[in-house]
Length: 187
Image (tube, rainbow, N blue to C red):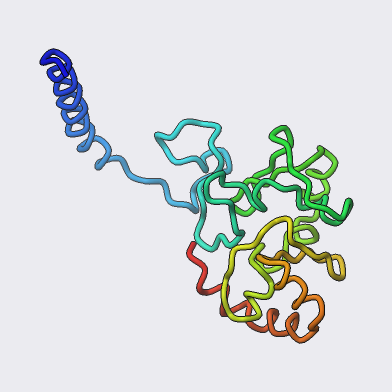
């Protein structure tokens, strides 16, 4: 690089460093609002641009697609029961619930979920039901699912799905293990 380019980069770095040093005392003296005093409108942290989804909270358990932040990797949780298949949600129909962004294929599906989220949320926070029965929180594939007694269960592999459907004791074991597995989930 030319000397002038290096000088420009160095002056930018020095400027950023000086700004960080100048802002540090101001930021340190501003008290943080406690979570109990925040209204729904104040749920975005001060200093962050508006329009961002809410930050995760303590106790959040819904498995999210880490790169995108969407629950169920952006698939519509209502469509699993209504259509019997994994249906991608649309950006036009989003809802923030339980610290995660949920997408829906239609406004009607979004409203159905808003009215009764516990009916449509996947069992075991979207983790592989067979993995939960084995005592582990295992990420699932939204295309591998089963709706059993109006409840959505997700699986990592087709083999796990087959085992869970064909072995009723795995369901009981997963229900019994869920509290312990829940305690191991990083939140």
